[in-house]
Length: 380
Image (cartoon, rainbow, N blue to C red; front, side, top):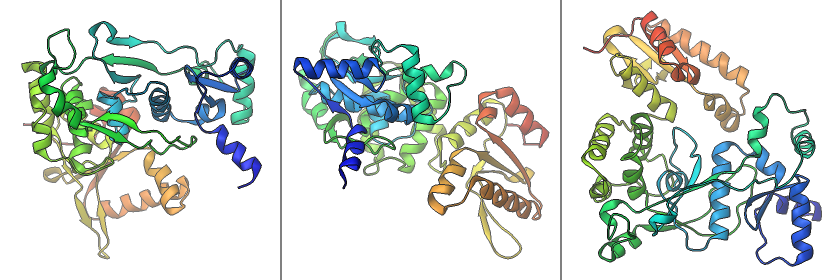
């Protein structure tokens, strides 16, 4: 590795500078104030281009690494723990979730300004250097925003009291549920060598689903039941062992409703959310991953299928095209042509194909119109 390559690699790593001498502290402060570095957490820095190029879910994980480096012994929980276990989530968490023994410390804390006192002109300059273009609109400034911290108490049945920390009688079981995870793979940042203390996947699933809205809960359960996460499969017994942590009968009902609706055949968060929105709009819940054989014997697997209407449903997520480039070397335009040919061949077998995308899922009325126009059957 050349010196230049080594320098570039270091610039994409989180650098911890606790107890820096005055000259180092001044140098770091100046680099933050000129927007060359971002201060992810106190004493923890990253080259600004690496932060800017990282998508929101990776900026959340980068912040997890910074917290793990600067706060020894901290334990990640809920959505953050799920993200560290590789579980796809409906939305990127807006804060890093941590356990706390102290009720007085619970709640959300805003992150400090990651760009220090950098003026707008410096932010524009680093944006131009990173992306080769001028920033447009106002949304670009959000990319320079840090990720907050949210500390939450232990599930109520594990506490010594309503406002107290972990019950000593639950200590052994809880500590067995704390795992040490390697840093996740990131696109633009080389993770440093640090072990992240994270609650087990089973506990994180139960604790999150019991507090989540229905759609977000289904996305989590679909993925976990299908094994779409890092590490070994989670057995149902492991999940059930943590169900006493549900804080109320309402939370228990929330869990049971989401679990009853969950289906491990869903292959993405978009497919999971589609099923939820279809049901909420009053249509029949479709079969998943139905295979259609065309005239020459080729088999096509479809996302959704309504047998009585002979209608095929397809969710068009952006990952379909970006993943094709990564796995097959195909350009998005090629994938579109392949999809059109696939759709034509399915229709030749007497099926109708209806498509929707993320924008349609964000608008219940739009999805309802699309499904109605194609004659998707209503729930009885």
